[in-house]
Image (tube, rainbow, N blue to C red):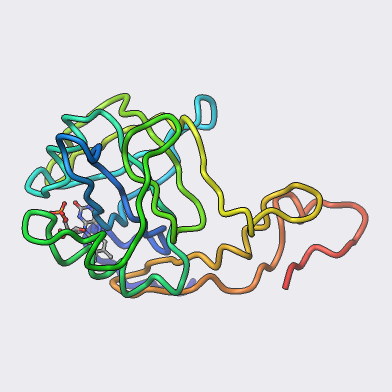
Length: 196
Ligand SMILES: Cc1cc2nc3c(=O)[nH]c(=O)nc-3n(C[C@H](O)[C@H](O)[C@H](O)COP(=O)(O)O)c2cc1C
């Protein structure tokens, strides 16, 4: 048996998504963006996701107050913007303006949809769970805004066209090539499963 190296428990789950969470309503509460890597889908029906945010973040109080947020999925070309929004606070800088991003309200929430991000999930806050360093905000995904360029001729979303970012142990990555699809391991008829 190969002996493994054993470490103390820590946040080594990888890769994870890295997203731009949008908050505010652009009326009494200015729009803001916060980079979040502790994010994930938590339920299929109702469609829900969770984002974990430290209470000291400027965005924290905004999300609590507004009860809604957006999750904007950045493409590879936005990596520097994602990093910037994760090291500068909306208390000091209008990050949307500084990064030359364009924001407009969602269909089901007032929080900002970022035009430059190919996919935006509009979320209504359903539950807030303090965990320790971070608080888990659970949101119901009420609507999704997609860049029309992602839609293929059959009307389906071609996720490859989004050229999404991933995050692992402090580093940003583009997604690699597709090497299979859901259930392909038990598929009887061999077929073209690899998308380039
Ligand atoms: C790659 C990356 C991932 C991050 N993930 C999180 C996260 O999951 N939760 C969190 O509270 N802060 C996270 N941060 C830190 C915040 O994005 C950062 O403190 C930001 O400046 C807060 O913005 P705000 O004060 O305008 O809300 C991350 C930063 C980076 C660069």
